Length: 287
Image (cartoon, rainbow, N blue to C red; front, side, top):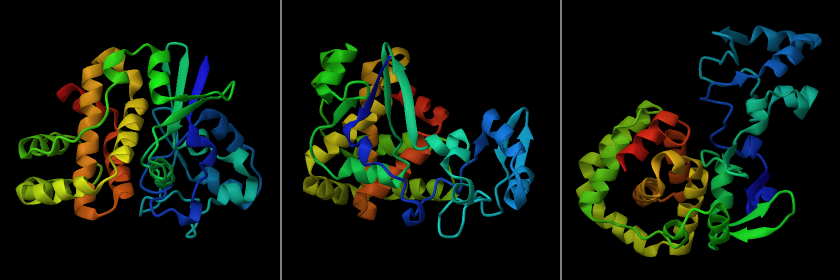
């Protein structure tokens, strides 16, 4: 098995207290069995607090979040009390691995960082060059095109680049498809409704914003979304994946035109779509 990472993976480091959207808040935190066993043997006040903060339902262990949906061990400065007292080896698997993802295609394991993470978005956008990837076992660097060729996914993906389709009817279709997904929160629902009502007014603003964008950076984003979901080709086909990624980047352009913040537009789209299997599959089927 050959593991592949985006070339920027060595630069990844959690922003901790500098992160504005902590992954330790607003998400369920499941605990693997090995960590549960480890926590059972911890001494001291914090050990007792950890055990008292664990709940179980249908055999699944998780931390009981606070009223404002924070991990009970997240300090106000954004640092983790468990790490500070015991070290990195004492956090559960989901905390240790997030925001990394892993998927299998043939003899390859495709690894990367989910775009709901601020740092991931920053690393992705800090360059306008075509994505490159590194084979973990050998350190060899390959381009996106070479990766597609290695995976045997065909010329249609190899030669495909992002070109925005900004006709009003297409923009409306993209927004309507996202309105049909299960919302992550009320703010998402309200914002999508705003876009639906105002899309005709926003059309020119979106087109103007797109004209100022570096198209190489948009293509880099497009390639990364394709990479993130390549394992779905077998079930949904290449054309559906290409349409899914094209719709995602188009929506992000609309969002960035409204907010003026490309990184946050990517992050918000990702947490709504990519972290819900149902939402991702619904959009792939729609395409």
